[in-house]
Amino acid sequence: MFRVSITPQWTIEAPEGRSLGARVVELLVQVAEQGSLARACTACGLSYRHAWQLLREGESLFGQPLLVMSRGKGSELTPLGERLVWAQRRIQARLSPALDSLASELGAEIEKLLAPQPGRLRIQASHGFAVQALHDFMARAGVPHELKYCGSVEALESLTNGQCDIAGFHLPLGEFEAAAIDHFRLRLDPARQRVIRLATRRQGLMTRPGNPKKIYGVEDLARADVRFINRQAGSGTRFLLDLMLQARGISPAAIRGYEQCEFTHAAVAAFVASGMADAGMGVEVPAREFKLEFIPLQRERYFLLCHAERIDTPAVQQALGILRSAEYRRAVDALPGYSTDATGSVEPLSSVLGAGVPARKAGTRA
Image (cartoon, rainbow, N blue to C red; front, side, top):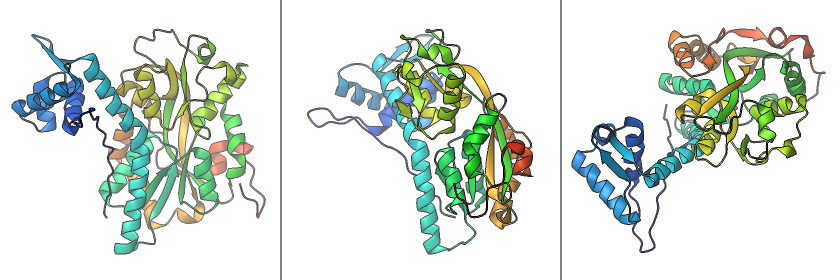
């Protein structure tokens, strides 16, 4: 099975035409992660001499240093170096899921021409790190599939319309569960569909290190001194936030930045880490990666939905085998805020969501 990869690349060009070498930013990112230039050289596969040459070229372009060396403290980035690292991380956070989806689609199209496989598994799901892990495990195992990241509503509609075989969506546990079920009601069909358990995870607020604005709940988002970054309309995370605001009588219009949005949890984290917002809502994994504070607000279950007649197909069975494996469960359990919960078990939709989801009438569509 061919695997396509697409990596974003960017550069900065000076007025006279000189541009920043791509490996300069790569080196700076590794310095930030490794804490020393020597370890960064090892991570990048560069000699110490070559690394210094790259840094000098970058510093010549900008006319100021990117890195300072301190005895006993290792290597530290200057404010300019830190900003370049932030730019790289934000680009990766915003674009990587979209590019991964596109790469998966391109790979599938190539495979269709070179080695047609009618059993290819089509997955659509909102971006989540357990889904990303499943995609990686399936790719390594050579399971023919294609993955598209999209909002939960879009994924469920695609399943209804036959545009995918598996759709991912998530439901909060507790006070907002009934409202969420009602939100998805017309896109759920207990008579035809089966639920595959994936994982539970925590949603919460991501704030800047040290939480300088003292943000502890959604009520604080309505304060005049707080800038917020939202998820896009149609995402499960934004819907959950709307339920929380409604329960507390808070108008979205009262939140500064409510209409400004990013399309992934990681992009929200990168936005907050940049200092352009004081808080955003998402899962815990990217908050830890960007060294942000995380205030947990809600646990939720992430499910995969599949038509009953597809469960016994080879592709779905291969996916289930991966979900039930000890290796996959260990990988998910290692993600901050995630835990496996009967992962890979197949259940009737009604048994998981309760009696609040009636069967749709024949012939109706979401």
